[in-house]
Length: 331
Image (tube, rainbow, N blue to C red; front, side, top):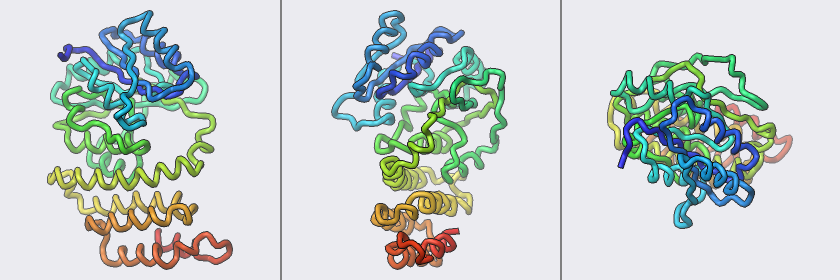
């Protein structure tokens, strides 16, 4: 049974013991107190569960769950499971190393009460390394909703996972794609934008994203790049299904197909081309996906096929000039 004005905060955890205390303390410090915090552990082997249990013992607004073994591993699956346990009228997703400003919940609920017709509201999330800059109050945000949608499709995220607050009933109609371990924030944002009756975007900063000191090294690993390429193919399939389901004005932009192609080009240039031997088969799959769903005009299709079948196998040969030719074709 849903509780009016209760805000459910859902936190997926996995080996999060380093920062989770600060995250949970930021929840405890909220000026608005009618909340529940649902932690869903994804198989931690550190002290995450012990720390979480300590908070639950002190305050029964914290709830602890483990992702059921029959559900896929990953933050998307853990978040979806958390949604099934939520009793709040509203939902916020918080990662286990990020922070909420003390007035976050209070201000978000106040705006929802002013605009009850909206299905979700978006606020701004500032980044920090050691400590947040609380003196910074606003970030200039794009307000044109069509431009925001176009930006997400081109893999330029306009907001992170914690920036929105959703009506719970609305979010249950979209949910996270459990096959995505990266790009899940982009996919759920696109679904929300397309399917919402209305939404609003605010410049106010009310949450904080912790930048990992090893961020660049982590995202340069072949393991993460493999996840990105695999998940991009799943993202394409999901968005194709979304387009087919929503034959309305937001997908009538004549440039929309080119935005999907641009997102593929970005993945190709920065990941596939630099690791051509590893991702040649994945590239073939993505090109055929784009062609099968009419995202490619004839010229672009033959250009991509030429690269995939003729040039890409030789791209890793140093001094051959093949990589340079491919980059020109993919401009």
